[in-house]
Amino acid sequence: MARKPAAEPTERYHRYSVSLVRQGDNYFYTLTMPSDVLARTCTVTTRKEDPKLGFQRTLDERRAEEIAEYIDEGGTIPNSIVLSAQPAAELKIVGRGKTLEFREQKGAFLILDGQHRVFGFSKARTPLRVPVVVYNGLSRQQESRLFIDINTKQRPVPAQLLLDIKRLADIEDESDGTLREIFDKFHSEVGSALAGLTSPFESAKNKITRVTFRGAVKPLLDLFAGKTPDEIYRILNAYLTAASVLISQKAADPLLGRPVVFRAFVALFPAVAQRVSDRFAGRYTPANFGDILGPLFVNMPSARLQAPGANWVKLREYLEKRLREKMTL
Image 1: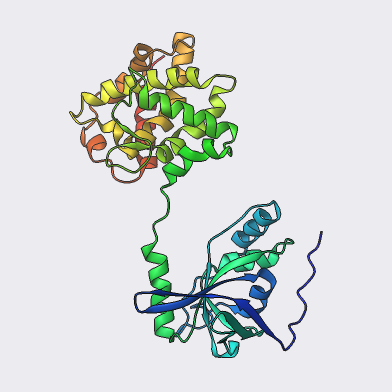
Image 2: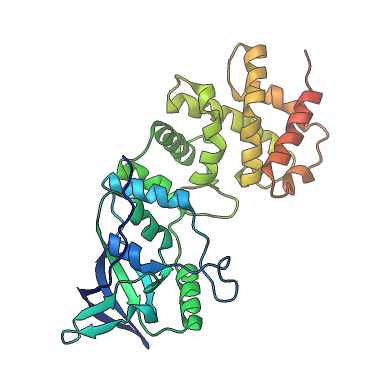
């Protein structure tokens, strides 16, 4: 269904109930505003449009479309849009300080935070009231500093924590659920090749997070079609156990806990598993995986694993080359 273009704004004023908030030496107003009014009165200055005075990011239209779809599907976004009133707004407080009045005009407000939400709301078919914070009387320098503060002081929720709570929110797809179960087994099972090397909830040096694990293992799921998470875990654990034993002969540190090394060896799994399948009729044991991997480690400089750099793809390519060179019939 095509969306109707917004009607041309008329010369009029809007009034909304507000609360005055003080934080330190700063004052701002909080209120809710209809999404269509926001769309007609807000503007964004970008560096591209105004290299001297602009500070906002260039709009990502696809992101705005995703917000619109989310709203039309019944989603809610309670975060406040942060605005700076411009002279064109003719903003004033009336009604004993409890009502904010402004003129409806494009450019009445400059968006300091939430430009994609404002644009997304405007593209949605569903009208809604939007929480808004309005600053008044700011200079461009103050607006720029506030923009910097908003975008540097807030810390996003760690991606690995979001993956962990998807189950609680009941928004896991089948692959997410499978990967979560396999990771949990590596984290808690006795005999796990990654025992002590996983970090489920936050980033940690030389630990495998859910995000790293997901990025490494998800491309392998098609290889395990029809297998349960427990079966997948047991095969991968046999492989990583063999790899861990061989790696330990090159260095005392548990290098498999390093994301670059972990991702490279997981990416090598299909090539190794194919050889195990051919030579050992699919008996995926640590010993059989070790038999295939062993020659790869002969005369390998330990520095290739101890100082692999930041690119796991290059390490995987190096391992694959050695695997091909050591292959025997």
